[in-house]
Length: 388
Ligand code: KG4
Ligand code: ZN
Figure 1 (spheres, rainbow, N blue to C red):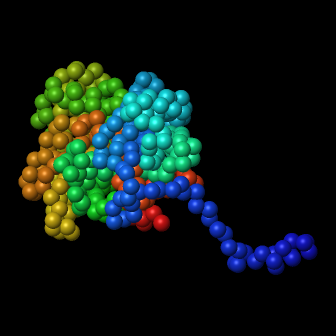
Figure 2: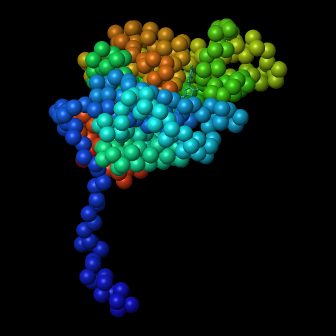
Figure 3: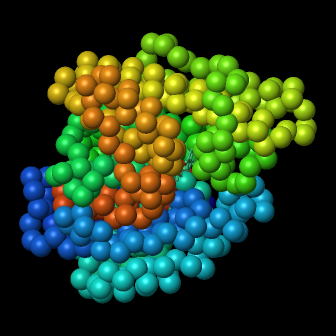
């Protein structure tokens, strides 16, 4: 008792000074105004969902090597991603994936300028594997580490100089359409985002996946549904267009999904291939019309805030859908914008975008402490506070 009391007097809680150790490794690249020193390549690691990916990208955005190992076979029997299986598969293949990518790039760890790993948002097990692996490489080679936000990595892909001459300039409107997110965002700088709107229920990719399941298509549903839709009549079913012409640029897909479910029920359990194709085509047309309308509204909102803006960047897995790309290109033209979408292989999850996000941050002199943890939830807006 006495002993505890005297300790309490000697170390009053209110006056205890806690010094947080900064486990940040040295970053020799530039501060906000530009970069110093040679632009060395960055190793990127992506393990937030079911792709085990590694890439090496140099300071000018040249892709020296990239590899994506899809875990399709592991998850397909379950009709979706099983988080535990995903984490174990990343653990099993990541080190080989990194080693082979480095060899293909023709660089050693000592040649790198930093290591960037997706640290969120995503499935926690996979994030821990990739993030810890990246930190391990950084520690072993005295390299700066960048904890990359997966959504920002999608957002910055359009700035790869090889995709848009000189890289997409800020500000631009990002229409992020992935399996877990559907958002319209004004991207005004690295780490600077303003959310203009987004889905109030399902993400666009989620809607594709759920409707594909109703049509008994193989997982992952989006690409399978797009393929089947090519055989169908898109005007066969007048599915609802949720949110069409509503003010703002919010999206909703649950009503459309329910309408498809009711149609499937009505036709009966034994759908012919032709009937399934008509449903797929009609659903896809409804989605494209809604996305084009929402993008047009978002471009108007963008112009109100940033009169100089003229670029619509589309990213995320759904951006690989040819009808979606065509619909959004037309919407952009109607508003005097230019639509930029990464090539299909860079729309879905990959490590090139992670390495490039690392380059963008490192060349501003921003890197992260090695005690930065994986974050299953990590909204883009949380990045607005710039690193110390
Ligand atoms: O960006 P992404 O690869 O992973 C996430 O971060 O979510 O997006 C995956 C989503 C899945 O829902 C998948 O079905 C959808 O994108 N997707 C497509 C197509 N390719 C992928 N949806 C429609 N058409 C496609 N061709
Ligand atoms: Zn993604």
